[in-house]
Amino acid sequence: MFKLEFLKLRKKTRSWLGPILVFWLIMLAYPLTVEFLQNKLEIGFFSVLWIAILISMMLATEDIFSEDYNDGSLEQTLIKNPSFSIIIVTKIFTHWLLIGLPISILSFVFSLGTTEDLSLSLSIFPLAIISSYIFLNLFVLGNALSLNKGSVLGALVTMPLALPVLIVLGKGLIAIQLDINYRSFIFLLLGSLSIIIVAIPIVVSYVIKAHLE
Image: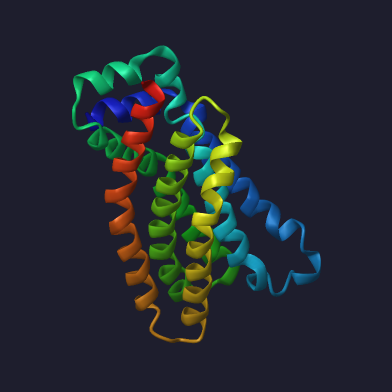
């Protein structure tokens, strides 16, 4: 199942390469648009980084279900597989593996290049990994709710759910910079993720079933 989803997504180059390129362009554009901060780029860097991850994950889910929904394969999959939520989990993980993980690695690279602080960048890396997976799950829910109604509606519905994550990321960054134990924020994000990766696929499977009935 995972191999099939991986091959399907890999063939759709625009679907996985597009969000990565958008993230790359946002991060490249940041130092070019703040000339007065050239010596202190790290002041606003991390705010841009979290927003870039958020936008990239939103774009990553834009057509996660739409193609299968339009050609009828989503309905056939639902009929053949009673445990539809497992398929949702597989889809989400596949998208994160091809999109979220490379973006998290790029986050580390851009952080190291901007701050020139290896310790700080290594601390940012797990935050980027966990937050990208959380954002992806949330936007998958939004995409399912707005299936066949336009991705903008899904983004509007899901965005309020993503705001607390951005707040935790901001607090985590402050803890890192002040040399406070930031692991509590990582555990908080991991705890949220553990709930989300169980709840979201179940909710999404019911939402898609409702669309198909």
